Length: 180
Image (cartoon, rainbow, N blue to C red; front, side, top):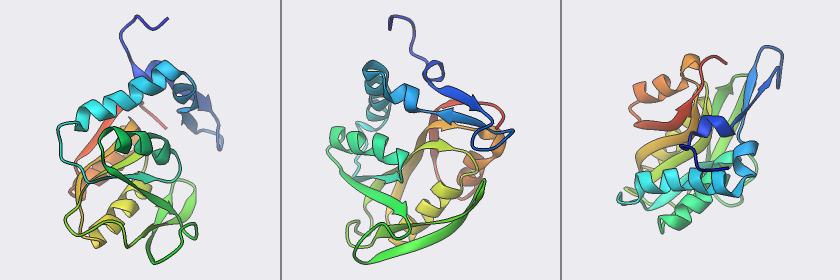
């Protein structure tokens, strides 16, 4: 079953008209539920960063946690979550941003990452880039070094990865889909 060349796009479901008409939702659930494909996906990230000094992996709520935590473990690095506003105890800083379908705000605790820490910023998908850019802004306020912003999927037609690159971030995705 798994002896053909590995292509992530073959394991990502496209669900039309969700969450609203005209949108094609790229669902990584199908990638996660197959133990071989899930392991292969994490391995892609591990191999990309294995020889890079990383202090922490920062995962964006919620699917960035699924990739970020096992990646941090494999890289012998810490894991730091960026959560939706109001979900973290202690001292936090927050950043508001626009979504494809509205407004949102993310936050991070201020006491875990130290100035100059080298991090990888992880999410499942880059669409408009709003969530990842908001998270990057939080990290820049903490004065950490973002080695790369990475995702499984890029939707380049929407322009988020370009917006991230234009902001000065190095960006990587393992596959892309055209259109919405």
